[in-house]
Length: 338
Image (cartoon, rainbow, N blue to C red):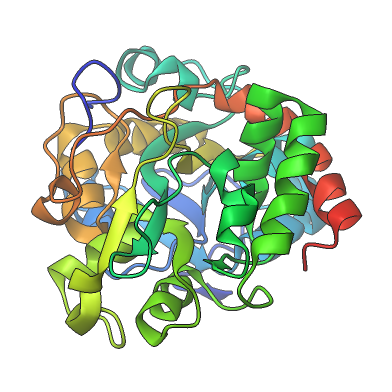
């Protein structure tokens, strides 16, 4: 688990055609696709009497939809994964600043937008995994992934993946553009195969022998502890993991977060929902139901996450990281990271 000194801590389900404020309703645009989130919604509805109408889809599609709908958008909340998408929604003028003493008190400042347009509610650590039998000295930092000693060994997702975009943006933030460019070049040179698939596929690459080292988010591996994941759980014991940069900035954390839509017809209900997501009850659902790290300090971790051990997370201000996402994409293009 995390050290106590650091974190401790589209289908329309119901009609939302009108943009007029409707008492007792909340229109949620969500790119989270986890069955366990159903408990979040049902408990909120039961506790408040507010009915949640959901439109679900991919994050980019929902952002494009909100932009096209403009002032007539029924959206009250955008709930999505990763800082890059939250920053994109903000930069396109789709979110609004909100004033909530509850959110300010419960969500750590580095997990909030500097202008209070979005807040983080759960996290995933970006971890280095390795074949324990074949890698005697695994990389200890993200920068080590570019070491020529690991040539032909690394499996990692494509440059279009939002997790990698934010990771590279964080490297720019900590080490500068030149060092980040050298890192990206080195990782490309060390790839065992062209980028393909999701994070689970990178882990399966270790199992199949296609690669000895892989980069993935913690919850993909933790899920294989909690339940059977085809092609991974049965061979999980062959895989070791490293929380990177423990003597430096700490492990990079990907974020799941939300903001209130700029034209929200039910703003008061939207703020209530965000405050609910920061409650101990909701935070425990994020961890127990989807193997994520809570954003709120002091909330107990699910056994699958606790099994990964103590580590120091990177507590860089994510608003600063978000500013470097365009630079990260430029670097990916320059070095030929597919």
